Length: 70
Image 1 (cartoon, helix red, strand yellow):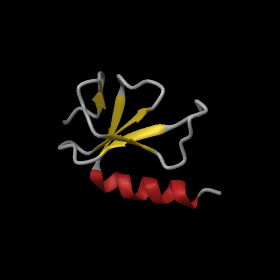
Image 2: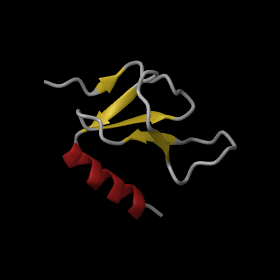
Image 3: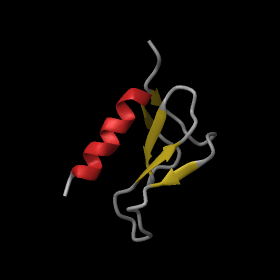
Image 4: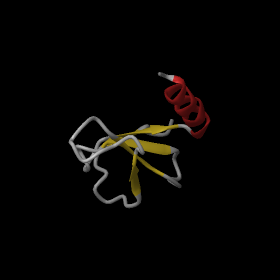
């Protein structure tokens, strides 16, 4: 089974913040595109990790559900 957690994300580059993020220190997440194991997601307040890796098949339904939430 593939590990679904990256304990230290400091060496990974190319993270992008959620478009709903701001500079006020609120709850934000970052994703890393084009990772070979799936879509890593981390808390932007903790840039060294950990990150949870979503399987590609689970990522799109997750994003759709978040967008549908009022």
